[in-house]
Length: 407
Ligand SMILES: Cc1cc2nc3c(=O)[nH]c(=O)nc-3n(C[C@H](O)[C@H](O)[C@H](O)COP(=O)(O)O)c2cc1C
Image (cartoon, rainbow, N blue to C red):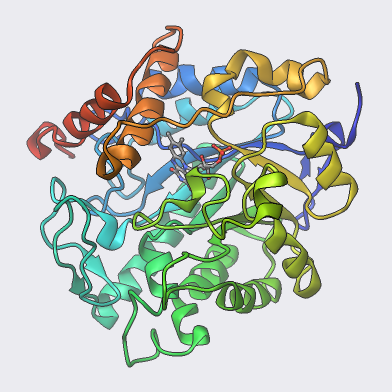
């Protein structure tokens, strides 16, 4: 079956995606002690490359060695091993695909096992299972340093052979914290109006573009909203999109939620709107509003599971690229058939632990463990339970910091 999903797509920078399917970012948690990629990364990404998806976005790679999203993250800074990064990039590359690195700084969502006092726009603590310390509000100097860290990492991606980058400004990490009036109560030029809250993101995009040149793909992952009262709203998001529209970016990926509300994991979570639930993918109603204010190529990630629905939204012009995460784990061997049209449905598996407070870590742990199994050449463990997944996750995070010694 041919279809719109198989059609190529040219990005504003001139790079062509061979089809409209993207493996969205999924944190790998399998670095070595120096926080460099390993043979496990290479094997995992060889598997992803074989699916035929036109675009692979890596799991988040951190630009700062303290502010990790998870133990086992890859870090890209002056101490990184260029050899290890080159091996990863070349393993992930097929003749036709694009491989982009997602760059991130976790800000206040850095857990206590990494630091008791993370940096954030304002000193507003994330209260979740006691896992996060009270952050320190960043100084102007610290903000400028973070901007430079993103620029350095982006240039390094280009140097070692990745074919593009994505800046993570979603899911409640540092850039998303700046965007939200709930976590950013600054009174200087980095807080207040949406222009000020978006300033750090806009500065990063401008400087990265200057550094990597006009023909290197730059994407931004942004929340449609964080679904918290007084937080980042759809109207805020549209304002940021207008600002991004004025810059030369190549792909806008829309997701939603933060650690306080993991909207990116659950269908209908954001509004419980019938239309959203009926329409399979999350955040999709927002696409129509985006199209009215922006021409940036648009990808939405979250909930896509049937070929029929992918074709429907591509045909309606609501979006350009389909982003998928978990099916690249649960249905890894089926993705090429899905692209070919011989399989229509992929799994939609939601993991529960039986304890509401643990469900987020159960979901994260389940998929984290499966990714590691795939990277080791094993089959996924279908019967892995919610409690075991949560325990796996917490033990993984608690691995002591001294085991991860960087040069
Ligand atoms: C194991 C796992 C790790 C993830 N890591 C990241 C990440 O590093 N960066 C990111 O932006 N999203 C991350 N996500 C979210 C996915 O990119 C995606 O937005 C989410 O899974 C919803 O899409 P899906 O319904 O197709 O899975 C992760 C999801 C999973 C399951």
